[in-house]
Image (tube, rainbow over all chains, first blue to last red; front, top):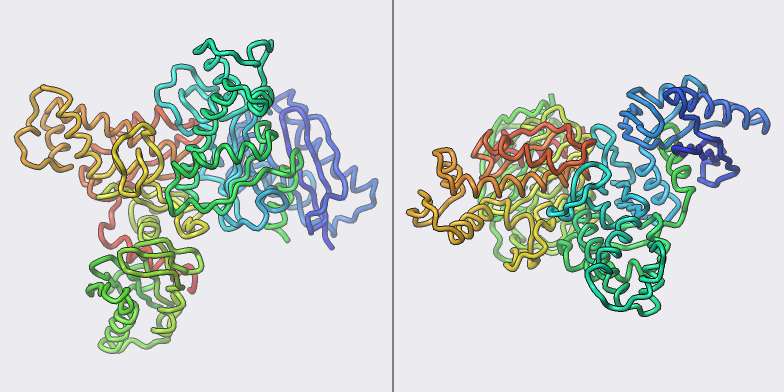
Length: 314
Length: 314
């Protein structure tokens, strides 16, 4: 049996997991992400943490297949990051650098893409060689697996699916500077924004009106409790999400769509609500799709990162 | 030097080309597609034509790498076709069948996807390992190349990009039964439909009004000649095409977008007109894209079909 590490590098913490080659997490821990000074300390910190762990557990270097790492920014298939704004990084080959620091082979990918690979390997997308993973969180991100391999994109920006145009007449700006992106509607913040707009457009009673600050969960809870206005908001949401997922499926023709992120905590109701709109908008030849909820939570990135290394070096 | 065949199977004719392994067409010809009787004769006819050609040229079986074939319908990565309506075919493994009939290894793909591979290998997308090919013809089709390989899709329906939703409020129906598909606007028939609607909405002078039946070429010609109404129609067209291509690039992050089909005969003006809208709608990290015109014309399918076989068997 051989072993390896999956690293999920975030803007505030680095999650590191130690795996056996079957994909079982044997141990996991976190270290802070030190972004000061252009993030020069980040990779040395990760290398030191892995080396320290190996020393403490008396793990021999010969048993290590390699290290995989997911990074919050564009990474091409060769491991070159192209500006990770949150980390202060410019353009360099992170795989080569971390490999020099550790002595192990390293494979790198974008964090959302790598999480998709994790869900494909051990989560909601198991057994689906063609899979689209969509995270409905603060923003909308995701990753695409094609015949078991990640779509990285020419410049490491594959599957930036939160920024497809959904409403070309939108007046408010998306975080990316454009107007009408998927993320402005389908994210957890997007549904809240839609809720406030909808409440302002009607005088109808809603339990949402008494809340100081509406959350995504409040809207789903109110909908489940029979609040008609919340249900209208959810129908709008399902329609937009269904159209968006239909467009993705026309491009990729996956076996499964796996939904993760904060909104997916609503559970099966999210899938049941979205499916009729998906079927309305999808091309018939791409309509045979399984919908699944993500199941790995915060570990998806570590799983996918190690899988990247396993595919490359095992 | 080894050799092989690329076959582009259409609803009325089969184009067959004989290649050397560098991708030079040494000979090409056509035979009719006999769709009578559920299309049972199609593959035997192709096999007989290839065998007859080899006999007449005294080509030894040992010099043949294999045969590639593009088919007008969904084909998965194993060669299973899933109903080719135009040919009368149901569900079977076309690669296995043609291989039994010829004695050579066979690889099959969807015709539009295979044409994309041809343009990637020898046409407008040369050197771009990640590429989107879009045919703007009677309909809108295309293919996606990722790290040099075709995206087939789980059920052989990858890159059915003509059926993304572009106008969710469309009242007219697309050929596929949905409403508001890309194909209803961005195809050669789509731009003509938009032209008639635009002409009906204004009394302004236009040279297009005297034509009995407006064609795509008429609209571009009138626009070039300074016809203001034609230019308005083209701006609408460029805006929709630019948004559609931006959405594709957010998903795939390609190095190049290659435009083919009847509308692309308008030439560079199509690219110049569309680019500003593409830049408006695309996510910044996916905006570094080369636009190219397809350059292989009707041979793209044969090139791509042979390339499929070459990648699989050489």
